[in-house]
Length: 571
Image (cartoon, rainbow, N blue to C red; front, top):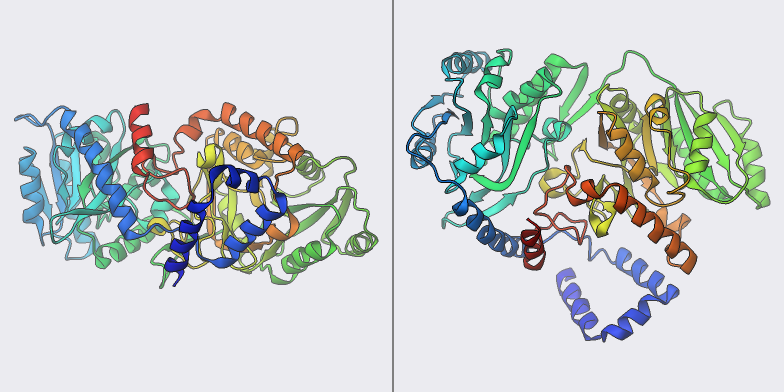
């Protein structure tokens, strides 16, 4: 029914002449009505259909195959060796390796105790020739034609390289591509996304402490855990055909859990429905968190926000700083005076024009906490452990900004990480998707690293906030200040993170109209231009995204034929 309605609406929109469409877009009331109607309909949350995905992938393969064919071919004296994990279906993997002239390989039986597997892997690794790289594959997986030269070229001086992957169906047709991000440690912990097809510098492989590595995912994780600054490359070509199974994914998640537990003070549970590792990073103490909430009036929103924090949050060591930016409604002023009497709440006045960056910087100057939380006044707590999870992450030495999963009032996704490049600037991954949708490759359900997160609910160490000078008051008073802030924090050598376990409502449509008045539009365009100029290199290729995925919509669809042509021309 929804698909039929969607097709009907699309057909109707095509009948409207472009000059009339442009005129209608300038009508504020009609634009507001249209956007609200689309949101309420639930029709356009945006997940691409299997048919559209396959169509786009077929065209992608045409371009990719041309590129692989033009690459250097495999020589008779190919300098590579391989380890195959598993006996079942290993013959197809061996045949694939021999077709690309890899004649040195080892097969490991994985149907035994992890300690036994670990001993066998250690024995094999000790016998490897350091002069040649080593390819790790699961039994049943195969290499795409002409893949090995691309693999070896992509390795470069990195410790290891992995590639995008796909599958081959019963008819021999390539399908179900997995377009992956650049190395994303927290996504790997959550989903074991690097499953197979990993080419290691053998010297790096031999330098790993020998332990219980029952599969490729755990070995990759161990490489990062033992050397956090390890250099990892990623090829955006689909070079490996996976033979995926639920058993492989489950065993990989379990092995990853055990790897992390050996190194870190963390509690990990595998979600029964999501099949995603959920990690709660434990703390020796509970640092004070200063939650900064700017507002002008908005009594009901602020009350719902503060009541939900006070009544539903299990983490108790926090203070709330309500920053009043010139409220003039009596009921709001009276309410603010009342809550100021609460021991955990302070109300501070910030007069003058609205400048989101300046207001939050002002709040941080008055904060007492080791951790700073930037919170919008229209946020409402859903999960009691939201702050527990977020503080656990933000106190990790290698983590900068931590953002939450934010939902519109109707339960659909408002924020689940920021991707640079959407709309030429930045946008929210999986926007409008249903709350319990797993997302692309489970990325909506999984805690992971993103280049940026929204400041509607953002935690950061106060030391990191100070190190980058806070939010940019001069150039980004309203828009993109959080994106710019996150990118500057990332330059400190830490990773930003989307915490999927922290769920809150963000009643954005209630507190904020569309930014389409001439003055607001001009300011937005100035701030967008500033972002595009300063962070052009990240916008060109966000490492948390994949260049084969579209930037026209926030749904992780493969680039259309037209977009692929533009991408190809830019190379």
